Length: 140
Image (cartoon, rainbow, N blue to C red; front, side, top):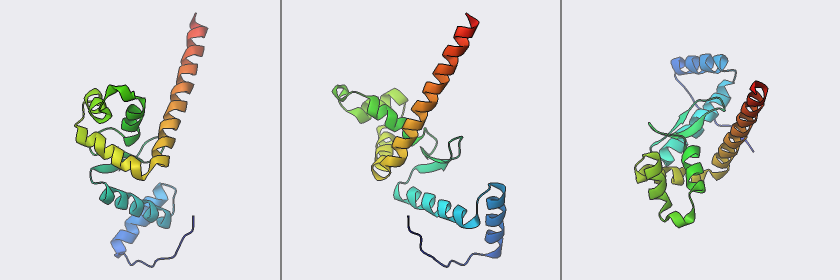
């Protein structure tokens, strides 16, 4: 990815907070600004989407709801013959259909990111299941 310089002036207090946050999270101030601007733009493009920290890093989520990848995994697992997939997933997850539609909107803009998170979760689930099987075998 190409990068281009952009000069931005910040208040001194913002710069100090930025530097302190970057130090405590082992990143650089410019890397942190890049991430914050990217997340801010994504939240403006899709109101209702926020970003949460987690073991796999920051991820797109519904404000007050599940992660986008969780909704999209459910959408992908719902058979086409279920009819209206949005309505089916909304009912299954106890969400309004408008929030499932919001997750679909975010996914349409960033499919590679969400597909990677779905795949990472599947790998983690497989590893946990294999560890459980080994544990069960040791106990029998």
